[in-house]
Length: 145
Image (cartoon, rainbow, N blue to C red; front, side, top):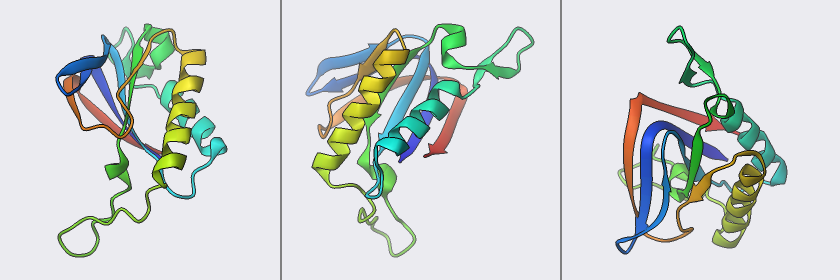
C-alpha cells in the first residue's frame, strides 16, 4: 500500500464537474493499493498517516500530527501509485490490486479513518476525478505500508 500525502490549506475533488469531497486545512491522501496488501497493511498505513508529524509547532518545526492541529483528511484512490516505470516508456500496473480488492481495502482505510478523524472526505473510487489542491509548503510525502 502506498500513499502520497500533501499538506494542504484546502483541497476538493470533482467527478464530471460535481464536487464529491472537500476539506480545509489538513492532509490529502492519494492512496494506492497493491496486490499483496491486506487489512494489516491498511492499519499500518493509517497509523503512519495519522501520526506523521508534518504540521508546524509554535517554533516552526514540523512536529505535529493531524489530530494535534485539528486537521481534516481527504482520501483519493489512485491506482497509478502502483505503476512500475523501470522498463520502456509506458508504465506497468501489474503490481496493482485487482479492482474489487482495491475498493474493499480503500473503503476499509476510509472507514477506519472516520473512526479516528472528525472530518474525512473522499473522492469516488474508480472514477475519473479532478483534484484541486492548495498545497501548504509545498509539503508532499510518500509513505508505504
